[in-house]
Structures are given as structure tokens and as C-alpha cells.
Amino acid sequence: MTDTIKLVQNDTKPLITVTLTDESTGSAYDVSAGTTTVNVYFRAAGSTATASTIACTKTNGGADGVVEFDFSGDVLLDITPGMYEGEIEVDINGDTHTVYDKLKFRVRGQIG
Image: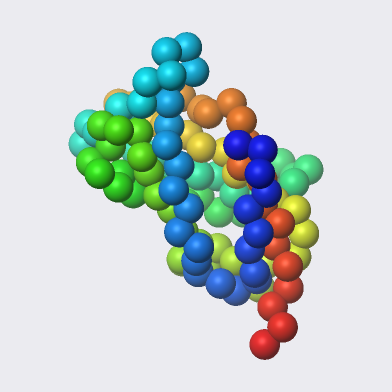
């Protein structure tokens, strides 16, 4: 997860697809249980304040570890251009598993 995802201020897309895997086995991380939620916490790089919490969708039901998210709900509305980071967190019945690697984003201002 070292690539930087490029975004434009005020957009609601792109749709980002992530496959969660167990680092020790390389197998898909099963998030299919109905009580399991996956969120991305989005914030400015270097900040400690979360700008947005983005809920992920279990694309194929979650057994394959594939989840998706986008930037609907005004996540990028009037946001200051610059570098941002995201943290993926899986909640399984109140137990938290946070993906170690952070997502990296670069947001540029909108022209029109």
C-alpha cells in the first residue's frame, strides 16, 4: 500500500477496491460476518484529527477480503489540497484489527 492515490477536491469518486489479507498466511481476511464492519479513517498527513470516517462495502460478501469505498458524503468537499492518509480498521464483534500500512492520498484543488 505504498502507491499514492490521486484525488481532486469536491469529487465523490474514484471507487477504491482493497483486498484484505492475513499477513502471516497470505490468505484473504474473511470479513463476511454480518456484524463485521470495515472503515477507512481519513485525515491530513501529520494530523491527529480524523477528517472523515468512510464505511466500506463488502463487494462479494466479504469472504474473499475484498472491500470498496469512495468519497461520497462530502469527504472531499472544500477540503484543503495536500497530502492525506487513510487507516483501514476491521471491527469483528467489537474486536478491532487495524491494517498496519496506511493508504496515501494526494488531493489537488478543483479548477472548475
